[in-house]
Length: 328
Picture 1: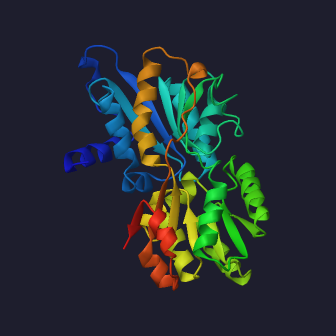
Picture 2 (picture 1 turned 45 degrees about the horizontal axis):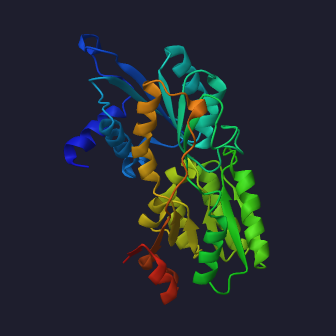
């Protein structure tokens, strides 16, 4: 994204819409983006820029035919609920939602306004869809596939750390998908004789204290579950993992890019770009109830060798050869 596009994306993040839409010819659609994480995190990761790009690719430009507002709950479910209520009162045409907390708040606020989920671990288990093929309500969108990748993350962690005995799971109690994900990780770990220690955090302070506890519990490594709030604090999490010498693996590339040891998952930024396709279809008359949830078709494996060196880990050559990208 060039500098001009970056500026436009940043301006779009201010909640106030641009003026003079009454002078525009044709329909001007009101779209709202509701994020359970933070404004800065979404911009820094390139996610909001990808969303703007995807909308433009499908013919939707702010100031021309859409009013686009963005709201960020900062990990606060009550704040997300308040935002969702505002959107219903403003009678927006469509809601884009990121994060379990944001999607749940939007779902509780309206059963009629279309909701496009940009990334969900398991839309069915969270109650957002009757099935992936036929959601059946006012919600559709994209899965991030993390419900299927638990065995792979455990496998990669055990290859990187052959003496691994027990690993922790960093989870968010506000994320409705995490209960089922914990079960998947337990199953994957039990098959190879490993122990799992779930650690629930909902505030930055709890993130800090959880690492001190994990050090006392002699955890060998950790896996961070996919979540908008946890992603918001990815730099803090990666730094604490390094400080406490805990090798870690994450569901999104953004963690490895800020110092996490490894990541394995779908290209979540591409979901933001593809959201424009869902927006276009719905605004042209398609019903979310009949639009299947998309699932990832490819997953990417990234290793941060700088972090491995700092941890004193010699990454196996076989693992390095499997990586789509190695950060030197």
